[in-house]
Image (cartoon, rainbow, N blue to C red):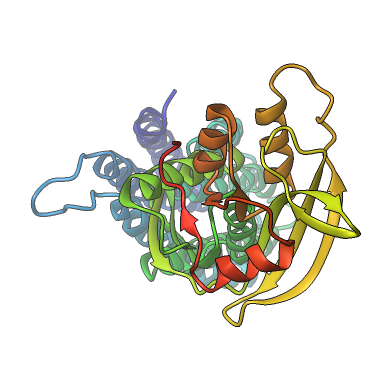
Length: 404
């Protein structure tokens, strides 16, 4: 059953319970059962409001509500919580007055039977409400499930108070006060969460940091300016402001946005929608790869990308363009006969390379590196690593946009 069906069923069951409780209370002059029946009237109101709220939240966006009706469920949660708080105060006051009751009552078998039936019916309904609310992320249904569970306990304690009425006439009041405290807590907690959602509060700062770390780990993302999460009804939305290189065009930006969206939704299924926007990000560091060979004790540029047995990995601080460090790494795929170029390109991407300086690249590594937002710069002849790196940071190397 979906959330809307459960809310509708809840309303019908609560109406049935109201009928039998009020009948038993009036027909047998049972104050306890009558009070329980009045409490169920409030349950019926909350069930109706939740049903309407869930139904409205699923309506598609239109001209008047271009962002949809998602917040209808949050408004319903707030109303439900307010009614629950009111009910808890009413129960507390009634229990407080009943504590002073000293008149012994006789056994009421039919009212006791009604209270037991109501207790188990409410317990089963609460389990269905809470399970469905968690599954479909419907806060109003979860709140209603918690309150229905409290109602089940209340009906059970009403039965207990009727059973012990002859010897302990004050027990009904004590039980009512205890239940009112639990119901009050449910109402306050649900109302607080609904208000936070309506005010666009971050539903999970920890999750925001996790999304930020995930986005930052994706190749092509230079930095993550901000991650904003908000809850609207049963749905959670993420707005991510990414920073990337100024050279990234619209087409590449769209590809990167889709990539980030796919990763976020896969890692966080509870996030229903991801919006990615871009803002230029000042580059603080570059990691540049240069295929090299050693001649006369000096590392110089090597002609072909895939055929190089060593690569110089150079870390440069930006924007000053100062070389912070350089290390030469052996190409683990130098002796591979097939797909050597693409395997080498994948290895470089894993090493967080931002730019490649080379004279020749095969089509496979060229397109792979471009798809991973690695900039490729062309050089010719033999030069030291320092010379080509300085030429790049000072804008004296040509960027390869298309393979020649």
